[in-house]
Length: 482
Image (cartoon, rainbow, N blue to C red; front, side):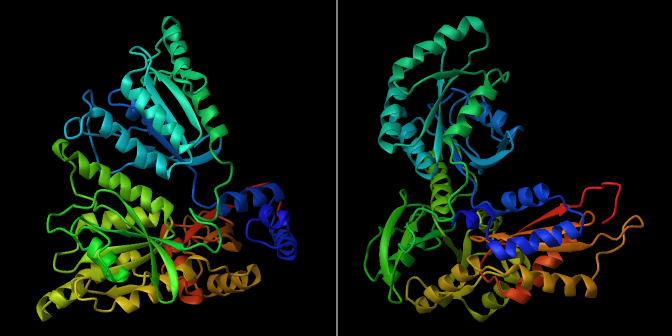
């Protein structure tokens, strides 16, 4: 089995044949190995950054991701739409979940910090716990420590705001938290962040698992996602055939993701009902910020995202943002158009136009028109989910893929740019869940041509209901031609 793992999705014979092909085209063996390994990785490991307000979490996240994306402000509770970012350190990529925006009223600060940390920790492989070294450990910090102990995830302790040698003693005081060595950093000035990240890499799993949250053969995990009040809880109750979730006309009643084992179409599925994601999260609506964090956590743990769209409303930027979240997470996707029974002819006509224009990015996803209220077409949901999972797990043998690429390049060569015509020389599928391909080329392939290749891959091999990742490796100029 080891060889299987080492060669990504390639078996031994296939791998040997492939490497021979690569050598014939002038590619270095290490270069090819590296490209397959990089492209073949499953979902990236997830790092959660937690801590009480104003300890510098978002500033640290910006340091880690190397750009100013997380919102940073001097007052606690600053929120934003996005909670997950991609980062790289020492050649390894991972995701960072920033828990920088929360409420101070409703339940009191301790409860809200704990609630937010809980969702983030739930989705994470490892945690950076940020403490303000100049203040020392507070009761809230102690509460978060209890939470971290219960979760049992690896923790790296960041003693922030250590701006010079004189503050090192403050950092040492944090040994008292019982989480091991405190790493003194200044998120603002970058001091000590390299050592912290080296430690983070030790805590994160080396290569991501190919399965998410369940043992092989366990129930498949489905996240129901969508804007508030699109009918996610009603849908869950309808598929379960009983009232399992509180349904309320008030948008955003669902606060916690509810994991439900439900028998459908002769199989058991695990449904995760998520709170709706809201457009703009204002300070007085801290619970909605948690909702987007919860949804991100549910999508990270799921295999399939069923995106609910309310057909009585126009398809919004918010709907598209939710779909993008699922696509970027690399999940199988089904689009369920809810409240279909409430449409008149005119709305139906305009909705079809909207779907054509606004839903282009997921035209490959199975679509079901349902009514969570009446149960219309609920029987179509499981076949759509199974189709998406099958696409998500599809593997194309290397020989068949290269025969297809050869025909494609012959019939539709890349446009000539600057007197040169780049060519796809060969390729392989490096992984599944979702399908990931690496193409080896003689020159840079334009974005439009990559999209064309993806479209033709779908036409030829199906891949219904799944995003496809294509990475391209260009042959190095070596001054000799093989």
